[in-house]
Image (cartoon, helix red, strand yellow):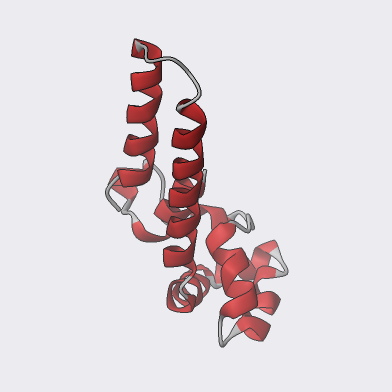
Length: 115
């Protein structure tokens, strides 16, 4: 889910299968935006913009720029990598099998998708 949250900010519509910023337009506050709400130099303005669905729709591009400028994308990617590392560590407890290899590949695919 974290990677999907990131892609909503950085991928094009063809990659996403939906317009960039769809989460913001719908008023959905994802991990990158949560980071920006705490760390952006514009966090007060961002809080106002994110406080209503109408404001989100009308200011989608501005909100996206604020989130991108905050470092929220990089931080969210680090979170995704940490979850991947945790998943791989948990998989070590299981015996080698085809299913285990598939799960390893899935974690790699999810985190390493191109933005």
